[in-house]
Image 1 (cartoon, rainbow, N blue to C red):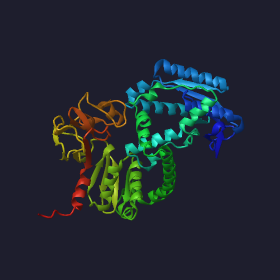
Image 2: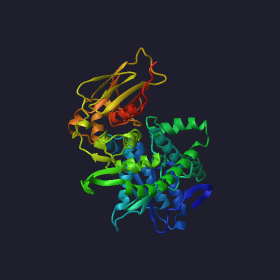
Image 3: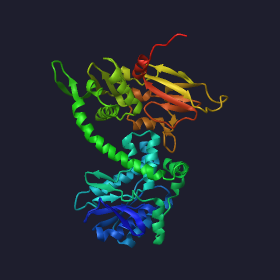
Image 4: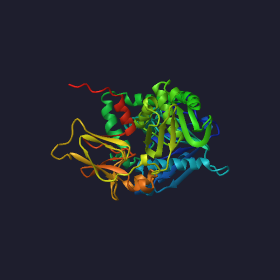
Amino acid sequence: MISLVPASLPLDVSSLRPGLRLAVGLSGGADSVALLCALAEKSRELGLVLHAAHLHHGLRGEEADADLEFARALAQKLDVPFHHARVDTAAEVKAHGESIEEAARRLRYAWFQQLMSQCPPQAVVDAVATAHTLDDQAETVLAKFLRGAWTEGLSGIHPVLEFPKGKIIRPFLAARRAEIECWLRERNQHWREDSSNRHLTFTRNRIRHELLPQLEAWNPRLREHLAQMAELARDEEAAWETELERLALQLILPGSPVRGGGRAASQDLAIDVIRLAELAPALQRRLLRQAAGQCGISIDFPATESLRQLALTGRASQKLELAGGLHVERTHRELRFTVQPPGSSPANSTKVAAEIPVPIPGEVEVRALGIRLHVELANNPPSTDSAPSTAILRAWKPGDRVRLRYSSSPRKVKEVLERMKVTGSDRISWPVLESGGRIVWMRGVELEPESGLTIVALPLVAAHLEAEAAPPAIPN
């Protein structure tokens, strides 16, 4: 049910019920101010017990302090209980190797869940409302697309997130930022402007201020279409989930097979490759990702396709090693998944015994890593006078830094490995590719693309299968 507040501001109240203790995440920006004011106007009609919640992220100094006081004053003006807390986002960034955006979001939602999870009668609220808009939805979907998301990633911001102790709702997902600001001006209601929203070092801001306006020159309704794509993706995922659960029970087999029939209990899993081959590629990919996910490993598109090749065209005893210690072996009837501790298998070694030159363009086969590393020049490579003709594959060294894709600043390789939970001998010799004094590839992570270069690491088993499937060369 969509209800319209004065001035036709879209407000979805379908997730609200009488008596709900609802906190609005109040940053002080236009969107959150409008959401709190709109819900305050309708709280008696809807039977809501309204609260306001402001988290000080410990950034932006006096500006953030002023945001807190503004939010407190607005809550007092609207006569709603006000909750606030302070966190040290910068310390979290340093401790966890996250971007500021990632750390701030994680801390914010952790606090929201804390407000909802305290046991009665100390529990503060039943749900939290955040002021995400249609513009936020469009920016999120586009960012996920640029990262190479699966369909579920394109579902963007969900209208409702369910947690054991409560839920987070987004009543403004149909509202545009421009109409929200217009609505506030009509009421002479002020809001705060976050100066960091103009900094183009943040990925979200680059998408908002640069990329989306350029794309809208091609299609002025792009934001609306991206929001529609998110809704379609959510519905598609919901439909697939039921079918996937049914097939997973039949094809993903727990434990290890034993002689004479049956399966022994273990952490291993297997997929029946005969039945897998009968399914459409979309279901094959989903089942393979489901199996890897049940092993605690998230796999990307290239890894999924390597698994499909191994399952559909591989031979018995062929193996594949993927990031996170995921070991997959092909038998006559099964694809068997095992998670091994880092460094426990020679085939899963991450050691580079010596520096290995990699021609640009060109490729090398690195059996110690189980990969074929392929480097290509882009269509418009940098000047050949300055561009290096060779990259060096080596183990990382203290002081090495990488720029993760969509990260605002370089990260220490040491911190990235800590976040990946890489330990022991693997951590000591984790491989990187250096070109022109910069690390342009690192195993297991996605780096910001290097201008003029395309780098692909293909699992050797997939490379070999690809070669075996190719027709023999015809002599001239």
